[in-house]
Image (tube, rainbow, N blue to C red; front, top):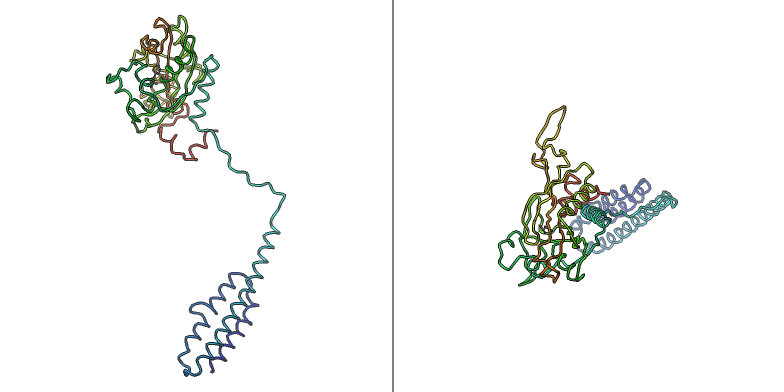
Length: 350
Ligand code: PHE
């Protein structure tokens, strides 16, 4: 048969087939059959060499015209389906349905715990103060009775910014700033904030949060410190908490203490009850029944001298790690959870 006649047959074939198509997918399929790379039209055009060179231009022209017509037939059909799909979508659209609300964030667990700690201490009469995370060596160390090159500096794995300037290793420089700013007693401040140490594992992070407390007034004694911290820990963890003081060392307090509280998981027994009457060693306090929770002490006279206060003044100071409190309160055993921004973790604290 004449190839041009075959072209016409192909076109009328398409005219016959199109009304039988009932979906966009069906239309796609039919388009492949006719116009695909291995489709009917391509196969027909592949037979060009069967023609004598003189007949080839006429066939090429006819084939192009048929192709154009087919393309436009498919395009028209496609439009019909698209309009139908849009109409159907509009019919399903219900403008009276409530919109989708944007997801609401929650406060970070460290922020929640920090706010709770500050609330308790502010209710006791402490004022909240804030200061810079990049500190002078004087405020972070020297005024706190760490002389240059003193071995006590080894307790703090410091990030140095440059000579004489450090990322603060604790919130204690806020003691110095508060006293310098006030000029004279009484001073009653708490200082929450970020601190930095060259340290990183399950329980240490290069950045973490501390809260510092400082009270300077007449006749402040260790009894006031003990009363304040016992009240504070019972407000934070519950009235059943027991508190004990152990001797320790900090250059800026004398005497210095480590404050422990009874383990909140095993209630100070060192053992946890499992199953029916079974027991296992408490993993939180490592069976000791006690948890280290604060560093504290009576302000060393050398600190009063450094800030121009009368060395006969009296005062106490304490410092605690916020992440540690949050881990104990919420039963979290890997500190890194706080800093990985995993929403599955963070969304649990509302
Ligand atoms: N700054 C001390 C530390 O980071 C804690 C502390 C604060 C100890 C105040 C005594 C008084 O380890």
